[in-house]
Image (cartoon, rainbow over all chains, first blue to last red; front, side, top):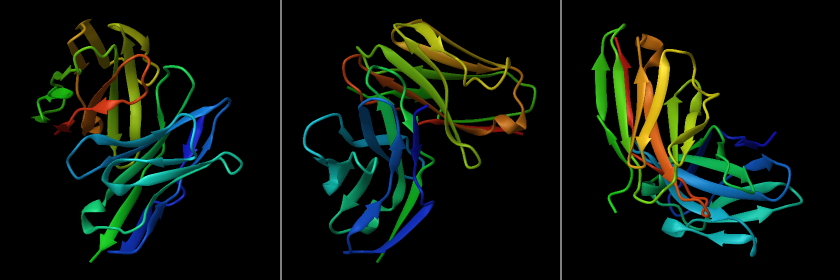
Length: 113
Length: 113
């Protein structure tokens, strides 16, 4: 069965420092991988996705994610964190086809000024 | 496009009352998803529809929950009777066949007293 693991409940980073939010997946076949962000009292917002092609995917708000097939990982990164990046981040996976996303439990990112 | 619209944004009710949550997906999208989010259980998929037909309702917690999609632009999630443990934020999301991204509404925060 497909699954997603976000090993960290909370990530703290100082403003201006690079940030990484980790995600590993388990899925048969070629995965479609996603990152979503949820700000307080808001719905989830799409950040970026990987389907095929370049392993480094660029998304909204300066975020990027690197697909690593051998490590079955899809970590979210940003070179320089902003306080406004503080939010709940979800990794999600879906096997090929239009089946529902499987979401991780989320990682709370706190960027400290 | 206005995005996915949900109403009401907040609902406070007493145990035993019927609650109806509403969702208008993005025009042209043919998949609609209902999720529930709580601190304890994270984000859970309750049910999803394709072309107004329920495809998988295995996530619906019990018979007190029901969902309908009478047409392509409207869906409801009903809880009858409601219980305090149903308190959560309920999200609706929609997507378009052939693309992968789900777009989430702002959510309905339900409090059952």
